[in-house]
Image 1 (cartoon, rainbow, N blue to C red):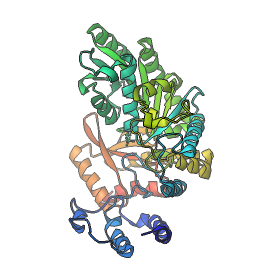
Image 2: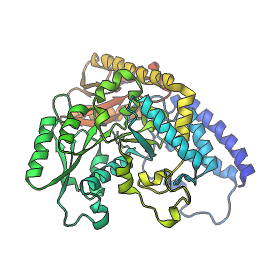
Image 3: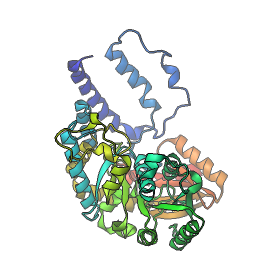
Image 4: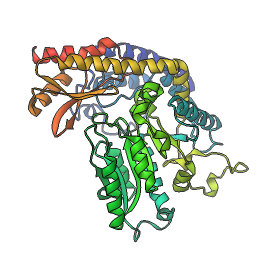
Length: 462
Ligand code: PLP
């Protein structure tokens, strides 16, 4: 296959993509396959001889779509969305065509400079103060890892990187039980250890209790631990919990601790000024992550980190061997020094395309619609016989339960997802099995959301 063939097949792929998206509402949202089914359709070894693209494309069409869970299905209400606006898909096609590697300014000047401008655009769009700058990572997980490594090194005066952690005091990081498992993973990978990620109790509003946080830090100091930082959540994955950021910052800063905020999903909603009270006090934190690939429409993967003082992270993650020097431009920003991987994709392009193609106003309308439709849907479900709303909508996420029974709720969830018209997932709330419902898919309409109560009524026979 050469570049002329690529041109031909790209057009075929574009036609396929249009038909795929146009037909999604007729497909089951969750893949209707058994484990191993797809692998069994592939030969066990790579071909020795080149195969015709016609055959490769035909195999793609016959094997892949039917074994795919359709994240861009308008009735995808599971997990959180991984939205791909058409404009961001186009940007990804162009980034693929360039196939550059943006590790240094000189390896991709346009990518790096557009990244810097996109960070500023988003910072302003989210109402954050101008003393935040930032960068783009692949995922919230590696962003949080970067922040936790930075809080570790900051409290160790950057000795951990040099000497290792052996012989140093045991570090402590604090978060509530509502934070995502990526915080646990980062504490493990950063050498802090799961046991030293202290889970602070939450109050009735599912927020980390600031008094309990302060008491835990004081107790740890008295016991000879070294507190390093706090991770707060805004829009937690399970039920959408948001910590009181101002109170958390006040406690953390009284002990000179680093504060990182995980707003991976809900950060996108902050383009709407009316939701910003939920993270009031955010101007006092050191680091924030949000994933425009979740709710804003920038195709996966795209995680934005805002940083108050990037030098602390650069001192933690940056290395400059001779072969990575930008000769004559030593002061230039090289984003690989801000992130875990050296190699970096041109992720800023899809932000540029998405923000321009829909405008902040268009993106705000989508998010407001999602939140309003979610509340409307909650109101209808609350009135269906046997159903109980277990957590109120946080942004566009709420949970519910059927017959006040784990077994009945789980069995209903299985039937919902086998039915295929909608896709929902589960969590545990106060020890109970509950169904999560979030509205956020880029193309979803009010009618798509209203399909949820219709399916629930049909499947429970009321
Ligand atoms: N934080 C929150 C609140 C999440 O909901 C998720 C994933 O859904 C993550 C972090 C991890 O995101 P990523 O897949 O970008 O690592």
